[in-house]
Length: 272
Length: 237
Image (cartoon, rainbow over all chains, first blue to last red; front, side, top):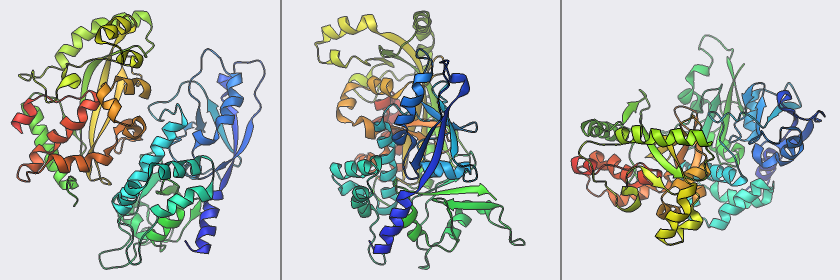
């Protein structure tokens, strides 16, 4: 890992979002109204890993005989906790309305939209399934398959406890590629509107030996969002880790530097 | 391509062979999707569980429903025998769930201990076979609904899995909720990371490989989640 690489990775890891939590008004059971709660949430983490305090704070105000699993909503949209927080934030286009205000619910869990999350093991299980799929795409499962169970645990605990060094000590092994030999495929997911994610097989190098770029990936997967030939105006914005990136950035670089801890590049497509 | 995996084109061929076979045997697998295809099957199965908290009157209704619906929906013409043996070979009536402590007792004890607490619950299993481009193998997705339309939670699902599978599988790496790749809704997924390996061992004869791929794979992984395959599949493919 180069020194400036480490700074980049650290900056991505340290990205935080100011969030305000309020309890759904129709779920307040006590005479006393709960105070809102403010937290800075890491972009690269998952909601169930950082909202224990929110749960403890608001559960005192709901009907003790009629509440279930906590879930969060943003302007009518239940938040899919299995996506990294930064992806949820970018998709919500909430940078113009900070702090990002989320509504806390303990009733009517929308199980046709959200995964149940009874414990942190559920998050770990989903997270590891993503890491495994990413390594299958990058190295035909060679690296993850040769790792010890304790390496898997260290990767997970690094993320859960917000320990950059601990996480990257293992994660850099998943990012290896020898000189001239890049990843087999780039693990990515495109999030666009409320439809399901788009995922395809894309190699970082084309058949004629050129680096495949972000622009190439978009042309291959979502051609309808690119500007028409007779117009310069884009109808859509493409955001990765909160940043708008030029289309000529090589995918291999993006995958190594701007992937989330699950080793996937999460690409958000928004209307311009 | 690695042994045991199949390309998407081959998956489509294997899927259409499989549908042909299903139609011939009177099973109910259906092809869905146009450009990206997947297979679906719905079936009703009675689970005996003491974890589920069914109100009493509802439980009584379910007990009646069990005899009416399950018999008809799960009977294959001329296929009394099943591919696998032991627990999975029994009809779709599964006794287990939450009786973990009782499992270690003698057979006699299991009956006397668990029966008074158990409630038969008719569940609808919604199975989907979807191709994974990442792993280059078919993947089994499924949801289990109780009669009131609620999803059976992971705890209940896990405890209904035949005990010998539970002992050899890791709960947290075997079953996870995932977004259905074509529908975007939460579905349970049997993790595909060992499928390639399994199919390398299972399929050595290249000539009939695609004809047998789905039957061979599904009869290996299906019984984990109550999807048993009539013997007629293996004798006809």
